[in-house]
Length: 207
Image (cartoon, rainbow, N blue to C red; front, side):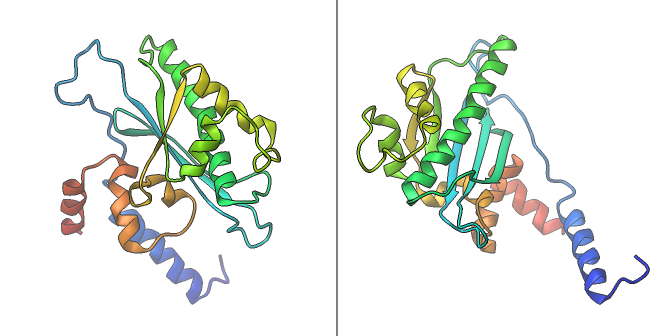
């Protein structure tokens, strides 16, 4: 630290400005308006992938966010362990990673005597990945996908999860796969910190 430069000083000020601007951001877990006490908690998971974006390995990045009653409770952003040959494969691998978290969260809710009622919704913006998960027959185009990822099919078959499509503009997990432009990031920010758009605007006005 005795040899810091202007670059280090600017970086330090950037961190301080970030901490000041986001000091009121946080995760808010609340019961939905009108929700009955005997109504199961709502578990939803979004998964996304950026295909082949790592410059060193050519691998894709997985990102997923899991919510209980609208509050973010689990999230991840990590490089996929193997290379994907297509966007659909990368997205399917992301679904597989997110599904592992869903299994854990469902078990946690059961241990808390709050079991899920029915299948957990898992949302992805890739229709091909949904088709792979719902197809219980391995075809030539998907036979190279590692068997361990196909446990997604088992979870669908036994009613643990259901795959649904989410428009790319509403895919909040996109923020965990790559750098987004400011407008898109601010669009997803309320879902990431558990606040409404109105609350976010109020915070921006105060700063």
